[in-house]
Length: 380
Image 1 (cartoon, rainbow, N blue to C red):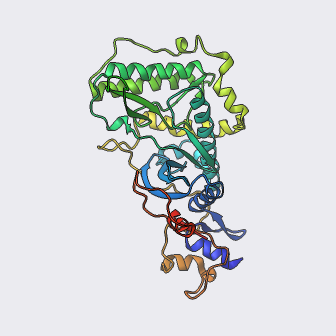
Image 2 (image 1 turned 180 degrees about the horizontal axis):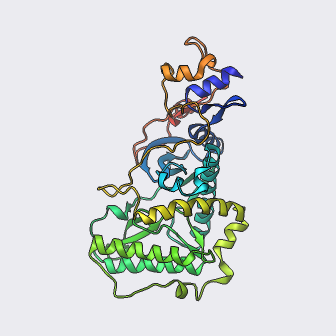
Image 3 (image 1 turned 30 degrees about the vertical axis):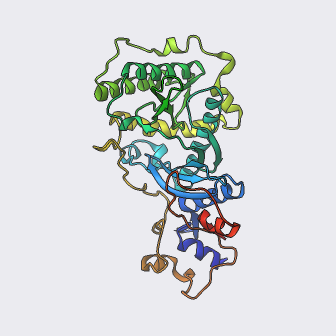
């Protein structure tokens, strides 16, 4: 047992906890990542792990590949990572969070996003195809598109603006509000027309953990905020301002599809009302703070500035780094008597993942089974 614990602690998959009652270890986000990867490996959802291609406010994005060589995207939720110290001082909900509950909320975010992506995809909304979900991660289709925030000009801003507003209204008719409908969560895909060969810009909607029902007590506020975000971006970036004052929340839900309430359907699939409330409380606490500061952490190049991991509220004796060196003196001191000697072999059932660089649009598994296992990026 000590050998296994020490091996896991050395690579940062568990971290040491010390308090008055006992000394022990807890699971880290790195350990949770590996558990999710192992689930995908056993289900043949993910065959290889590639480069990190994006960092969100509370998520990491990686390119992965299936057994057939098809490239996919794996999104890892990291709730609790963004800087919210001003919120922590004012809201008991965030101040009392612990490491375990951040993992719980991250899992809820992944469950919610996967559930909504499935029903939205089925109803014909332009969203990535969901492939799989495990713990705090989601695997989805890789779309060849540009984030709207990185586009300086479009041929017809009026048309794109109308499509985005129609998407907002259509979501509301199905009982849903995105809650974070802005240039960071909209991809623009170029599609060539078969007949004329003209390039058409198609908006793709992503990021759904904050999605809420039109019956939510603050539904109108979030709907109006989504509308205002698009209006503000088009005015600032493209110099376009619509003559139409709307759309308006009351008009959008007036002719809603009562027989196809997607919010109710998702709740029936297993994402319970209690889970939704737990996640909504966090999103509202952080989202309100972001709204007060406009777009929180936005850098000059339009990206989000990451402020590092949150401070843990538990009595943790130092945080093990994600990729520590075995001979790190600080790590050795933290592990204490459980540290393994340099000549000690790891347990026979030790599972390690060795990520490798996966160039986009260049990988397909080939060769013998032994070579495939090596190329896949992990070994047992």
